[in-house]
Image (tube, rainbow, N blue to C red; front, top):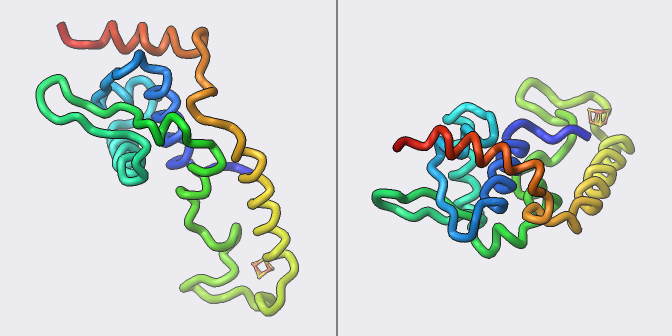
Length: 149
Ligand code: SF4
């Protein structure tokens, strides 16, 4: 199963923030640089993470966002569930017309169960446990080098 691009950006941003030194504040621009994703995509991801209470904003000069206590405890499975609002994995019913085989379709239920099994496997994976030193050190070095003097 493939996760969508928005979920991937949310996960990357949360990983970056969870690896930051305690209290580390990042602007959306810095997060965009750190996760290698355009600013407007990251901006939407940060808004979503804020609405879920996984990051918190600090306003004013030198402000930014940082991971919250809930964000430190968030699991990959939990986050993906929150971000995937689709009822079905395929468009069984759509404004363009319903699938002619929708009545009592066994495949529809099987796909839903498979997706739930996928999420369940990731329910024990805490996002903040994923980043490791050798992975994140070069990212933070690059971000520090870009920081305005
Ligand atoms: S065959 Fe079943 S799962 Fe596939 S689109 Fe039709 S209703 Fe949905």
